[in-house]
Length: 400
Image 1 (cartoon, rainbow, N blue to C red):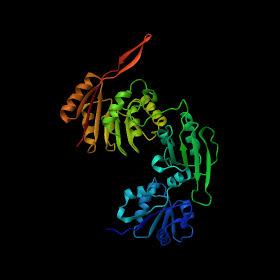
Image 2 (cartoon, helix red, strand yellow):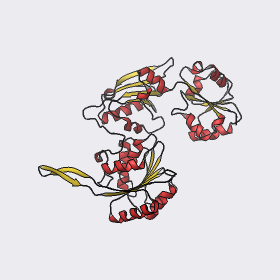
Image 3 (cartoon, rainbow, N blue to C red):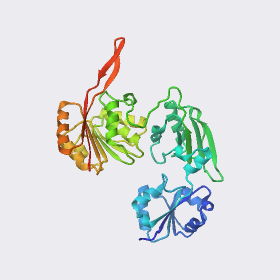
Image 4 (cartoon, rainbow, N blue to C red):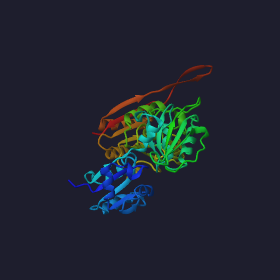
């Protein structure tokens, strides 16, 4: 076992005084201290060689590897494993070489200031990430704690709340928590006008107005939630499709023939950090998908201009694949080969020709076949009747 040489230390606004004695001794004995300007100021009394965050930030791992053998401390804010640098380092460097020293996180401090129980709150970060990611968390009576990306972020989030009918939501911004310059700003979304420090944490109690947009994270959003040209996986079939695809944390979906992106977007909404690549050769439908991803809180949806199977080469291995268009035996074989163990492959067929291919695939790979038939009530003159949607033959299989 390699002795730990790298210490990742969480530090708060109270600086060195807030560290446990043993942790403080490690920082004081460091030869190299790596961190941002704020971290260096909080530990300014320590004599060590100072290194700023490298640019690009991904170069940090190479910087650390070059320092192996020295007494190295990386300073982070609060808990270095909660939306912080510690997790990234731990994925790249053997954990036997690292010791973590957590401090109270911004989430814990903010929850204490608000009197909120952390298990009842959703914790989010948009620090260095698209702010639109918070949109999928906006629901009636939901409480959110958000690590922001700058002084302008609270107003941007208030605009999201306003646009979706949550203008009465209670908003608090907390800055420099547990330090001598701690500040608190309170208001509501529709009238938010505070100038806040760049480094802040935001607390939101979502309060829905009478016309609020109420969207579940479970599969089966209304078709009207999406911009589309009529060609899309319809709500009831989409719900059944997502159930077979089984969204999971950090998992990657290939959505082949993505259209307006409805399946990929619901996949990303359904599980934390879920990722999706949509392959769609029509520019107008990719534009729909991009707009839908932004509006529904999945701005990291990756869209590829291309058709299967050629567009599938060199993509990261998927945890699930959905083929909603462009089905060929070659595409299915390539998708099956690329799938990780326990990966899920789902194909929806509408035409007789694609149904014939699905039957061949079921005979070769096994799995489940289902015929999904949906009728929707629609006006017929002054009365109401059932109007059928096109039936869908669905094949689903898990790779073992």
